[in-house]
Image (cartoon, rainbow, N blue to C red):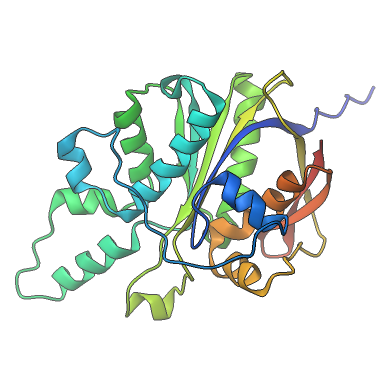
Length: 269
């Protein structure tokens, strides 16, 4: 007798955080994505991570500041104890600016790399600093899947919800590399978003999302500047999903994942 298929990967969106060029938080981003406000790109300026102790605050780079900013936005909007949240941090690489510094040092006569700079350069640094800032011992996963990192992170977060049956915070983030690395790995801007996902509907939850692998054309954005941001930054591949959530009317969104394979997300208000 055939077994019943497993239940779909699904979640309820409780809160969202965003920081990017001209996008300072979720309310302002929702206004832009729904056409209520024009999109005006501007330099992304991650705020200081005030939740970190002073010593760690001085050491972190822009990537950690960016990731922690949107994570705290979402946690604060959900009014949940951040220390208890399981987290998934997804990025296509490490801190581009620090990687540039390390490469410059290796090309110099000194060639001595600071251990602190090294551990701040790798892709799981934000996860570690989040644990320090929030004094969290909850499970945390850091992953990278190149241009498909947002979709990979969303799949991982949904899988965590299935096994933990407790809220999961997804954080996807990116900053640009300086030259000459930028010529080899061009990223258009610094951008990050966070989704606080719940396993069950409640009075404080929003739309329901259900994800499955697909082979369909990906959704795009009508605004040329927003579409350039979507194409230019892996973490911004989630913008069509954020737009659907901002509109609040439900529908199907298809996001880039791996070559020849996409992630389809059904949104139910």
